[in-house]
Length: 277
Image 1 (cartoon, rainbow, N blue to C red):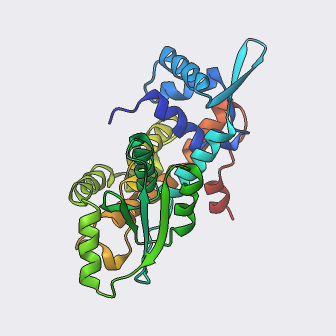
Image 2: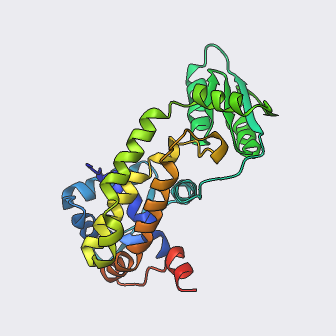
């Protein structure tokens, strides 16, 4: 899978550099991205663009430029990480969170932005203006009203009391067939890492761990994280998630040690602290 420098920089910050005061020397980041196959010029150009977009601030220490995450980007990384590493929900109380929204006909941009945010939150479209989530997502959905002042957004709780109707709603809100195919491809492409991951060290551990994060992190934003009662028969999502977590954990020690060596300070991730308790 071709990994773009922009995404890789954010992955490296999300998994490691956020734990060293959210900043790093440009030269150290060039070294880390070099392990992932990115040329120094491409890394420096991408960093410059991200700074122009407000994702980083910089300061000078001698001739070295230090890049520091903006608070806004740190919030985005936190939210993304919570989705990527969240456990699959198993039980379900039968209630749907239902969002019905209206926007001015002339304001197509707002309408598309509302849809994008609902999809980000795990909702699926029953109709163009009615979206459903099997989770209690009321609080998140209500925040959209403040964000999109020209829209009218109503949030309700609904239920069918009919398991067959609930599964039919899933089929109408989400096309899961392609996602299932992609999950199977991910599992087949990474299954062997369960055995080989503990043997990888240094740059190899970092490269493999970053690849699996880069590959897997798209799934949670396509997957509504359905409880067992609503999943299609033979659903592979939970298996893929468990495989991702197992490989990510197995590579943590070697990858973190290598990044710590490059940046010259200990990277104390939450994951490692949990493993050492």
